[in-house]
Length: 128
Image 1 (tube, rainbow, N blue to C red):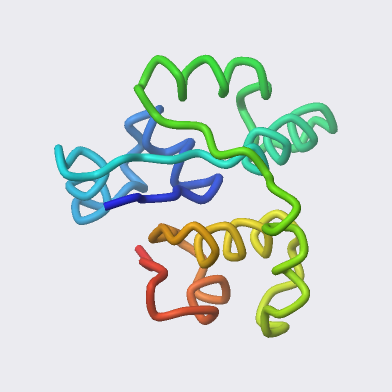
Image 2: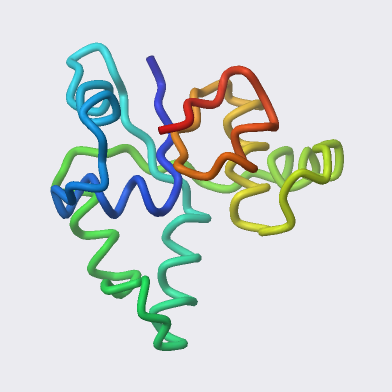
């Protein structure tokens, strides 16, 4: 299974944070799963960390290094991903989350998120 992690889930996974529930941890650690991190996630972390927002404890460079060390695959942003955002329902206004949803639907991948508004976009999204 190709599993795309949203930003918070990705950060919880590399930090072994207790916010990452057992079900999510099991899916991420499954030998059958290929774990993907979007370039949009790195971008979001870098922007929020650079602005000093408290919920982004890592810089974009540090996060990228940890994701690579964890063996996660990196998903570039393709023009088709960006264009697909306009076809999404208006459940969520965050541009990073909307791009992750579009990427998951186009590739296809299962997006794992903790945000119920993001999960409303598709039955293929895993809400934890």
